[in-house]
Image (tube, rainbow, N blue to C red):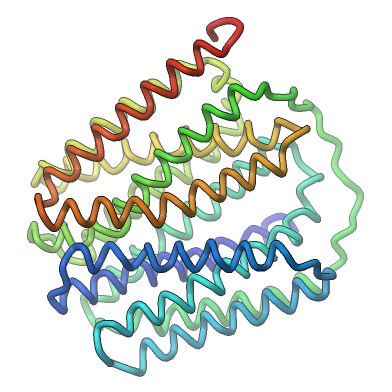
Length: 378
């Protein structure tokens, strides 16, 4: 049942990965500026935030949340079909993303109800690991699939996304029909309560992870095309970093206690700086694959740290998770807008260097504040 539950976000994120890769590539091929392309995730994130906030204010029964899930996946499937069939003005991309972002939020907020049915069966670090694996593989597989298919047909990836939405719809009915109230599996090793200073440090880490992640996922395809790489190669590179993130997320369930040693995050920050500089200035495909793998290491550690300690801070877990989601949504709006504007004016290499500087400044500041607030250095 656990595998079936996490197939829902995996397949849905494959669709989101396809959308957020195919639309920027289509815009780039049509001659859009980096600023126009960067606004695609801005629209997506703004709609995601607005829809999440709207649904959070409504109390529904379990059956009601299932209905929202079904309606949401049907809406995303309709957007995929229309994207495949209709070739209209470039501005239509924003309309499609508006629909997808809104209903994607409704889907994932409602999904929390289903995930909660099995979350008590495993230790917290396993749940965080499973969820990170599902969305990492999904968002990574989407660009890979879209990039490969784009070489043969520029629009067929939307048809694949529609098929995946149909698969999610079928799985939803299967999940709804199964009994989810089996006996809970005892947690062998309870997670100690987390001090607030680690949670606050995690907010800085998730800000950096979200801001740089959306920047690379959305703007690199355009940069890669301008560098002479194919859409398939650009998709494979993005899959490399998200695939690395998925593999390391699985391994984190065995080594999560190492996060207690704060220098692990320093190493991850170093991976971020190195990878961003190589991506911005290297022209060799092997070097780029190595850089994207390093970028995946950085993303894994930062996201796992932020989510794990937010949830293990039991007295404020719901507040912490809400703040995490708010930071991710805000980063998805501000980062592409700011970095896309900079890329339009200064070019991509300078922008990647500026993003590396942003990571360095924010991380060092947060790290110093963490050490000052800690009773002892870990």
